[in-house]
Length: 71
Image (cartoon, rainbow, N blue to C red):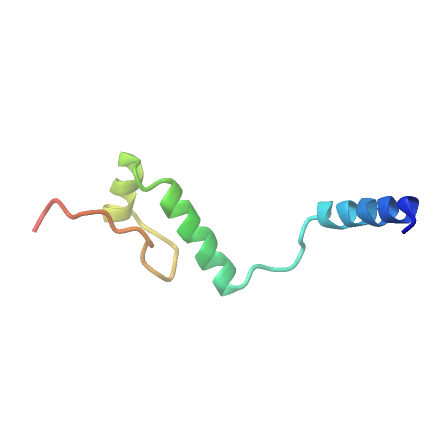
């Protein structure tokens, strides 16, 4: 096995994966991004206010539903 060839292939792969993905986001990509965002902010009181009373441009409801305090 040629070490220089292996190093060149690894460097090529590193350059290839460093290039940003320019494909448009699909519905499942947007849903996953929204879900990650909701999970990251789930414990923020401001996020919970937005989640309950805010205006949202998403077609689906927020992914995280914390316990309701009102009945």
